[in-house]
Amino acid sequence: MDAHHTPLELLQARSRLKKLLPLLHEEEDGFLPFSYPALEGFLFALELAPFEIDIGIWGTYLDQFLPPESLKAETLIGDIIIVHTEIQDALDQSQLFKAHTLSVPPTLSGQNPTDHPVYHWKTGFLTGYSLIELQLKEVSKSLKKSKRYRTARDAFQKAVINTAIALEIKIKADTELQHPDSQSLLSQPLFNRPLNEFFHFSLKTLVFAGDLFTDVVNSID
Image (cartoon, rainbow, N blue to C red):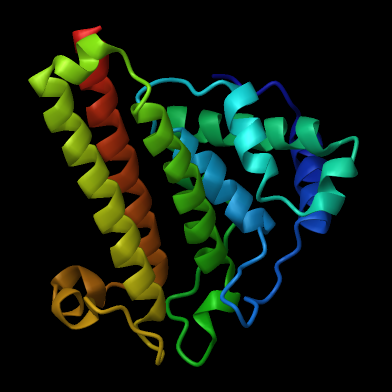
């Protein structure tokens, strides 16, 4: 898909959205306000689905996570569409660096990982993936009966969840906040990579998993 917006329009859309969806701290009850990086993660997740999810579906689903004040902005929908189109275009061209605006450092050592944009991105990504899971339950009976489909679906789900868990562990690796599976996974060579490289590798893994699943679904249809 070719972008239907200019670089200036993209810059302006991102700027307005960042004001509407600021990066806030995680609250004491564990609630993490939906920020702009989370929006990018959400929209990225939509591109992994083996079928297009209509904006009427994902837009309504997204609304429940956005701050109520942001829903009053006249520019909200148009700006989200611009960012979504940019992410689609970036993935179509295999230019993952254009699929987000995160500045990921080599390590978060000494920082609270939940305050960093990459953690918010991961949370938004899982929010988008939860919508894909709901949509997979609505596929046709012919697909559900296909063993190839079920095998590909299971592989896709496993790849996404494992990658998300690994990313969370890597984000928190240099802090006191640890995941139960930390010790076993941190011993793998991949975790020796700097966080910025690990994040890019995670994006490639997710896109690859989505493409494989999509190819199987298209071949059955």
